[in-house]
Length: 336
Image (cartoon, rainbow, N blue to C red; front, side, top):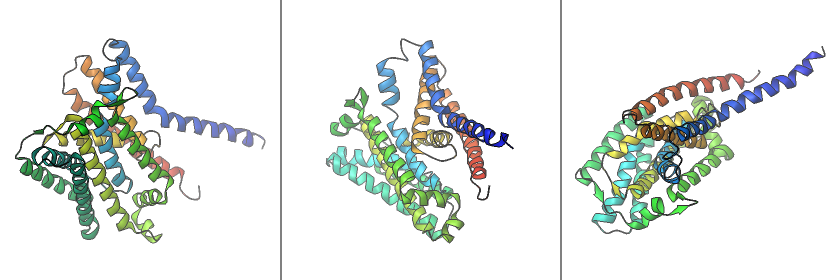
């Protein structure tokens, strides 16, 4: 009789330690990766240029695209069109600013508006016609890619205003390009919305079960549609940052960001808040993957390792995130 109360605190401490270990597993592995490559290549890997500029400073686009994926994923949807959206918004900025002499700030607003329109169209097709989001966004992604090739005449457009380039990659805060800080701010805002607002809880509720959410009085269609619009806006913002990072727009290179973004979104769901798509988990995942690839490249590993790394990370991350989601569902089943 007296052993049960004594065992209860022990079980609680054990559960908390396991929970904390799971939450911090990926950040710890990231730090360990830095230590290992720093030991193997101390003269190149641990330099300020490599850590602050090459790793932290160049991944803002990847972070933003992962955030664009997270919003619909939380609501139970997929948006395959984010990478094509990125290419389109970057190309709109370049064409308006370089070819037509439009102010860079107006060009940015036009790019963001285009991203919102893509989100509206995707959401309308998904909600009003009841088409699966994967199929819809796969189709719109191909369509958008064709539009980008058409409006750009299949050429790379360079010479984007220095006002954008300076405020993304050249100017620094604490030695890190401003693009990093923009992505961090967007991550914090999205975290606040998803965790501390009614809208975020409703999106999570819809993602866990549309039928139950509908019976609870939620406007499920409106929430799903809004998630697609938010995804379009964030993907367009990623395109703007991409244009500022490179100073140009390429009609096809944006598509290369899709697999890494999905890898980061799903790998991020295994840490910080295991079993849930979360912004800071995605941030950690992006920089863990970038650190690993950079370190392997400095060790002289062939360039194909990038595809192997991202592809393997995606498969592993999906498996782990699904296990975490199932375990959380069991733990929080009513009546247990």
